[in-house]
Length: 294
Ligand code: CP
Image 1 (cartoon, protein in one colour):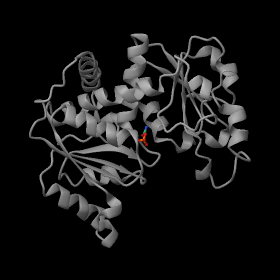
Image 2 (cartoon, helix red, strand yellow; image 1 turned 135 degrees about the horizontal axis):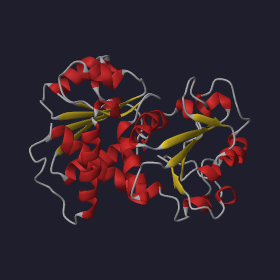
Image 3 (cartoon, rainbow, N blue to C red; image 1 turned 90 degrees about the horizontal axis):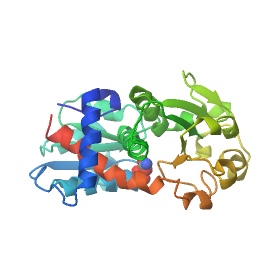
């Protein structure tokens, strides 16, 4: 039974197959609707989501799979049922996969270890968001035609970001060099990547900036007085990127004029919505791999 808890569950060959299949799905004008006909997926999101949940659902439906969404706030978890029992009961309906998001780092792996149904991690705590890092990888490859030798700066609240965590695991494995840009308290406790405090220190060395959502509310001790002070240092603005040939990414949700300015969000160098479009094709490829090619 293959699970996807983080990208280290995938071989290089499987990652290559995901990138190829996603490219093929995107290029194709028709949906390969028959591919996952008769397959059943559950989505189980204990945290809010706009992109990941709907993207998985669109991807599954394009492939002909049935998707059932269980809203945890209306489920029997609220009557005291444990998450393991909830998972076991969904498993008893014999789905082909359960897509789960949870605020606790260990939950997807814990449920996967029950070996009841394949688990796809749709975001766990600050630990991992593997399908986001795969769609980011695809978007970088699509833009540049290659991955090897590209330089990316991850900017913002890196310590609290599951997107950054999965990117730091996957992108270097594919030949991309990462620099981290953040105030010291936003940096991971230990890292092998080059760390910078200011965007200006790294902007001329990178092909891509991945901005992250400022999550000031997660910090017990305030690092900045408010979001405006944070933005003064870390918002991606036209002045900061100037006329550089640079690609701007963000996993969403974007905090406008805090993470990225309105002007940059409308700039053709900003690929935030391309990431969302690509997310559907990459998740189609992931579902094909896990449900069909396993
Ligand atoms: N990128 C991402 O995980 O967005 P959502 O929280 O909207 O799913």
